[in-house]
Image (cartoon, rainbow over all chains, first blue to last red; front, side, top):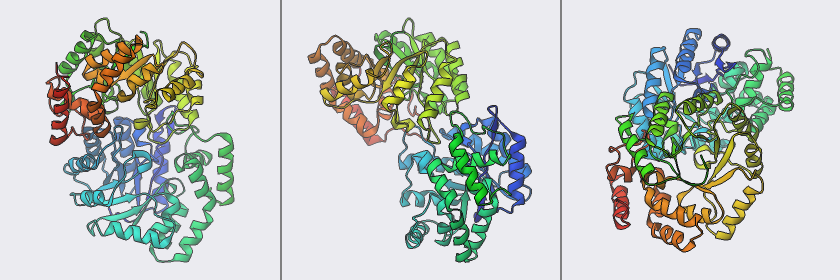
Length: 298
Length: 298
């Protein structure tokens, strides 16, 4: 797969505490039909850390089976290196085109330990790996030195970075600082959806997108415009979605997109893994109002 | 079991990425012989989050079998409520006298979600539960309001709090502020070993102890003295161990006690779950020097 363009991160919906494989298959099929560049199964939005090995194996297979020609990347993060390696094996057997690895922590890890995890896992891979820098969930802070060490490992194809600064010049400087330290073959993808347009225009190759996993159409619009250099169109669509970015910031993109998927009937109610709860009624009403006002429902 | 005195938290040693059940049985036996008041299997020091359900089931059984008359508490924390409930069932079947639950997070949880986890889990228990407040690993901050709500649930017997302030008056005020919000039947236990003497003298009923899981003798000494009101003796032993507390702060009590257990031949080398690494050679040398100087090896 190419690690550029829009990678969409769908939810892995639960129903009565089990993965709703039918709904998941339909979510994946819908993303492929919308023209996303890749689909990432079992990202943070896909609740990977809450699912057991068998649930993840089945979800990966469902994603590959329903994505058609669209490449599927599978999240393999876990707390123990041997668990990550087993999940990597499962993902590759399921037909994943790539794997995504965040250094999940319980005990805090130092840089040598984080590097060691990527070293141990990449050594056994036969598909490319995307480094998943997600400080909000892993509590690991990647320095430029750590990016450089890990990006030099075999099979590393891309780095999924957190949001970039809002100022375009600062964002470009940030992306350039990362690129200066990593091989030119390793792409940089932005996450933090509200920073996506800025990130793509600042030189990121890809958008690893929560929004794109539930509402692919506006995410495709932003990605295509930004990567084609059509600043006005990218900015227009990004600005149009401002009320949604505000809800993401306040209520978390994970919970907001789950509420949208539930509202649109794409997944059953109460689709998140307990102890995580869906939004309360008031918040849900606000989300639905924004979905309606921005005409995101079609 | 009574939720007072010294609860010792042993490591669950690995050998070639599998639980070394023989070594674990000997660790537990050694703690029981040292006269600790309870043994907590599968605490953070016991690497519970790195072990799968079957490994945890077997470790709990080994602990109960080797603890003799000493009550065993078993850590049941996991990311998903249904997993926690399954682990609670396993712990109770293994003969645990109590369970310990930390609200482990990947996606950040709000107070209602943390409360909901404890509500869902305590409802199904037939043994008491200790609330495990460990912000360094869970990234959850317990407010006094949250303590109050959770402590009112059925089966809640104790709260394991983080370290108290170093100043005795501030420590006492902190313990009093917690006690004012929880039923008198719920005990308060201090963790953060360097704060233990202060915590016990400030009114904590118990010490949930990393040190006690590997070197029970000095931990028993401090606990007995502090709970008997022998301030001088508690302070003397605590002060004597200052070089050890410094190493805990710098290198983490988890890694330091693993290095000590490995040095003493209680567990095989490289006993921590990858990606966590043991201390490097320099740090290990410093730890061994302190163990020798303080005569902790017998």
